[in-house]
Image 1 (cartoon, rainbow, N blue to C red):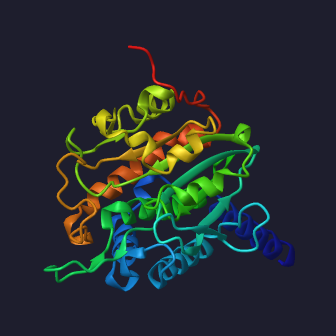
Image 2 (cartoon, rainbow, N blue to C red):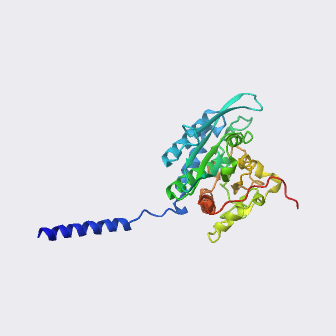
Image 3 (cartoon, helix red, strand yellow):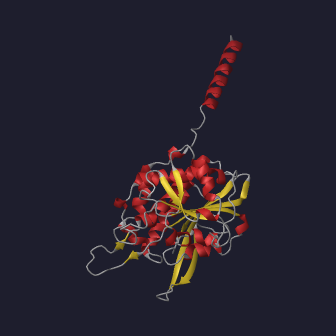
Length: 329
């Protein structure tokens, strides 16, 4: 009887173990990127409490603390030899001539088989701050689309790729400061990088409104300057989301966002956007508030960026180096 009991007990334990093995962790897909989380990031970063996130102000300090808290919650590591997520530096404001202390917020998700190859996912978290104008009641430039929407995307992508845990290359998530003052934060970041190790720059700017190409579409700056955009298009086939070249060539947008600081080093760094910049009545206005944006549009674009860049992050595709000079027609 004792032998029979032991046998039955062992069989039950083995059966239970097999069942546990079958109950694998749920597979992480882009559907895990949800509007609730995106909305939380957006409405927090673009709230009046952040005071327009002007570089060097108490408002941007609050925004930095929020981003740092999210990076810590997600489980990102610090960058290079930094002991914290902040990359702090000082610069002289070209107009006021005042010295300003500023900081990029950087978190790292280390790669597996190709961790010495880096992909940057970025957006700028600064905006115009508080500006009192005669006859204007509101003085807080919330910068919801420009660029709380992009910063929300960086946070959502950081959480997605961390949970997915399949990145062969190292991903560096950066919230750049002082973009509005002339790409100062991203320029500082680029000063000490070994550009040969940087495979791609995925910059995100103003994705809160439907693009001129219609629902579930975005456009990419500098599309013709590398094959980065073609890789994204290939990966998005069959998803119902489409990526187009920048439809506003006269605006010179490739050089007006933080991707340019890395592109000038030869890194294939481009900006995703959906912004109707030619007719956007809220651009650089106090009216750029979260209520004017379509959170679903932001969420769908984040999902498309996650899916579209997956082969680059996994090491299957490597974009060609960026071409800076104008191509001959």
